[in-house]
Amino acid sequence: MLLLYLALTSAYSWLLKERALIDVLTLSLLYTLRILAGSVAIGIPSSSWQLAFSAFIFLSLALVKRCAELVSLEQSGQGSAPGRDYRVTDLAVLWPLGVGAALSAVVVFGLFISTDETRARYATPELLWLVALGLVYWLARLWIKDLARQDGRRPAGLRGEGFRQPHSRVVHGGGHADRAFLLRYPENPIGVTGESDEVQASRWLAALEKALSSPDRALLAPLFARDAHWRDLLASPGRSRL
Image (cartoon, rainbow, N blue to C red; front, side):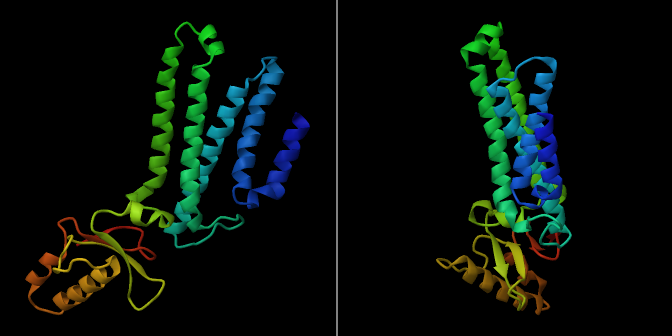
């Protein structure tokens, strides 16, 4: 057991930590091996339920750390993690994978509560569901805090149809293909219906440019929702209110 742990730790330090996903899977295995080694040392056998729960929850915790690192890189304007095979765009996969691992740990715990062995061991095994609820709350809060880190912004990999705010659009503009802006405006600010998001946004930008060039500031009011804002998705991690 000790030799296996040392070999796996050495492999992680020298090679595996540079491989995307393999590093977090290795970490979850290492932490689970610690539990298994401890049970051997004290002479109490580990159950398959305990090992499965440990593997999933440690995988989730390793992924939440990787996601936090990538969010920090994104906010500093970097696209990849030095020394690791991760990119900011990987957040689109890592976030749901980490949440799924957390929920898998809770499911394993719930199935453990329902076994005959658990019912025979505990006088009121139903109380263990309170622990399950606590796990759900703790893990969910952990991931929510990671997702809404610092300024509550959405991750770059998750900007899309399923994550839009009402009447918000991601618009490419400014004469540069790599420039993108998140715009929020009224549902139909310039009387156009039945057009695509890109067309509506282009018309809105044209109307905004016209309003800004006019001395009549009243032309700006119809173009914005009450809580309107814009954000340069690449240059500015914060939110600028209008």
